Image (cartoon, rainbow, N blue to C red; front, side, top):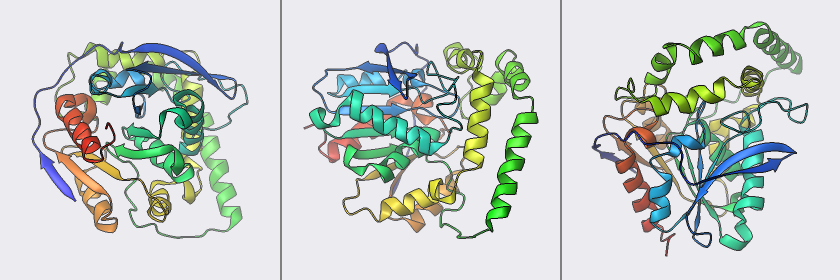
Length: 323
């Protein structure tokens, strides 16, 4: 199913929503935000690459006002969460983040007490959400992916390589990212006007004067271990097995006995994951639902929050989640 929707003007709100808290996963600090009545149905917001829970600045309080308990988690390596893993986590990928999220649902959100969670993810956060769903479906009521990355091979191509080729590939990837001056690159981008250029690729509207947005991305990037976390992520995501990649995760979810509903929300001006890939994805998987927002880019939850919030709340009302 596909729906096209026109947008309205942007909001540029402060990222300081809810109450800021810390929780520990594998003895590593995880930062999260929370707002709304504790007994209300839980929503967990999962940010995209380079962002944090702060990026839900124009969404979280709206959902809370509509009768939900809203959490925003900083994935390991991002935001205010731990970036120096001290050997406890070697490489970061969507499987690690999914394990982190599942533990968060068990221990903080407390699914047994408060009911299954609604997961809303932007890009990398959406991949983390569906990966969590594929591992722990019993924790999740529905997933809203806005948008979903890795749809390039929407119908998994099953190519099997000898183990020695995989080992050589893994070695080369590690070598490249250890030699590449990531710390210098991160410093240059986060401390110059290049950050505006980099961020603009994820938005359709101009973000030139959105200083809050720039702060959301640059402050974590200037932390001492930011480059180390980025290197861990680059190696981890590049060396994942096929079973951890988006198309395979979707295939696994497709075959779940009690599959929760999934809504895809896409901006028709998304430069990072073009809309034609979303249409191709639902062609292969018609059980997925797709809503397209006109004149919106990759971070549509932040770019057109009023409309995004309306779409989410309508979806949840139709599922009768808040009743």
